[in-house]
Image 1 (cartoon, rainbow, N blue to C red):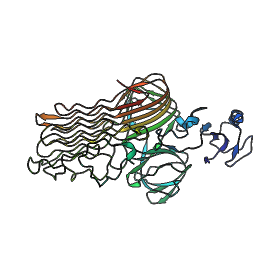
Image 2 (image 1 turned 60 degrees about the horizontal axis):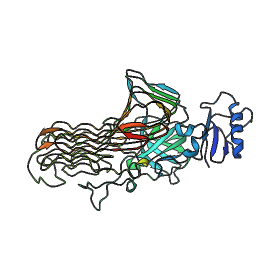
Image 3 (image 1 turned 90 degrees about the vertical axis):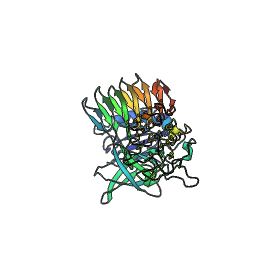
Length: 481
């Protein structure tokens, strides 16, 4: 049974009608009511409800049996969508409760708020978030629960393994959408969010973030305008996520470029001596490796040529850093003791996952390129000639690897015209014949569309003499440029 917020619900099989306002006219009901209807009565009921007046914030909504939309399902977060979009498509593309939004042509703004998940209750109907920047979530807001990383396995150690990582074997990347019905302060700096429906997935709070997802009626990004994400900081950020009930027009830029997993920091005192072949070499012999989906494996003490999941390895002695990866594998650095490229994330069930691009390994002096971030959107109509970008960063001088491309996941009703979708890996830096960074692997672009297709650039980044990253993956209504 689905729970509503401040309105009347009239339900037919697989459908519901919600008016999100106190109901005092026509039916003289002031509290939430649930009435079972035959299928044939639904259209008539909808007409009757629209006559209740204009006091509703969002008007009429047609929804399915759940406000929870899970990315842990095999169809990639489409739980209930087969019915939800059939009448008005409001749940599929959002309620429009955030209104029409036009991004200023001369500015760039994030549209999301990000919170660290503190805890989740046993039945999945409430969660606590750390409100570290005093931002708030309101009743009726939509949130995404997204496990961005996971603990690294210990047996066997993944250090230096370049075999493909199968998405179904990972907890990282799982996500779902949930509707908030009430909020309260459970402790100083901690907010409790009650959800309309129990969440379906299982999440590790230590590696999960909660994102407020705006639901625009329409969204316009004009030429010169830019929507961005908060950079990934090890706990939150890295993703732009929104729903548009009507038209999404992109003539400017929606970007999570270089906002994914972090590249290995530039070493300050690297020395070309010590154990030059070890996968794990302490500084100053080894340089920092890039960050990936396995947490607690990034920082100044995580050094050496071995990659960690899809984060590229650093350098031992002399060579270039390994490239980060995502849908495509990262390139190995150039030189006898160069970093190993990040492992590819398999396309098996990637529709149900959202991954940040892997960070690249540092070179002998330069910092590794950061991976591309993530874009998640749904829109009834898409048009424009701008860009949606999740590019990996290039490696820095000297000899650092390029970051892996990020992830774009979109659901579109009708494609009127296509902006450009970019998820390329970053280039490795070449300092000399034996010090060249590997290229970043290409990203993942998965678009679903009822009508129309769009091209996506998912090439791996050049290694400039070292190994280039391999191309990423385009799925659904996305095809390779």
